[in-house]
Length: 182
Figure 1 (cartoon, rainbow, N blue to C red):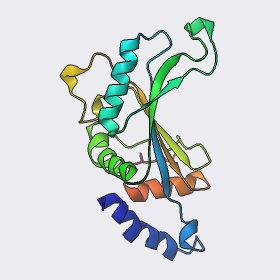
Figure 2 (figure 1 turned 180 degrees about the vertical axis):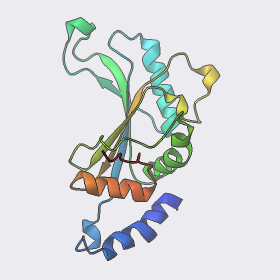
Figure 3 (figure 1 turned 60 degrees about the vertical axis):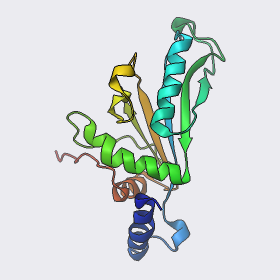
Figure 4 (figure 1 turned 45 degrees about the horizontal axis):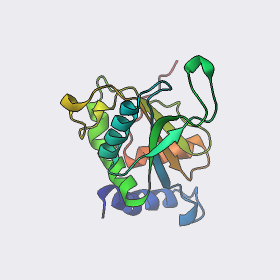
């Protein structure tokens, strides 16, 4: 069993249940999925998209799905239905393996890292984190990349508000930045 999943089941759930804010185990917030999304741009050549798919597959261990544009925007030379990026949705065991690697290996590699932002909550139980360079993942070989790839990582939970989401992610090991008092 994954160490982070075991930590969630043996430490996080009992602690949240003992605090008395949740009536039963099923009401306790839990991780649903982690979605990694990247976009190579509207006028991207086919090779850029293939590289993005290959590198996202290396990072996640799962084949990415190609994303297409929803509408045409002439200023960006974008046509409806054009392939513009890729995404991967991780659930279950793979999600917890990714989270453990992300919290313990990837985030410490970010230069001048002082914690993740406290403002990226959507109000419905999700937290989104953006990176402008995918080379923070140790699986990526720096000498083989052709272009930097930005990416968004969305953590989806069953929490009902940002406070519950933050508490769950913090207990799982996400390092949040300290809030400044004015």
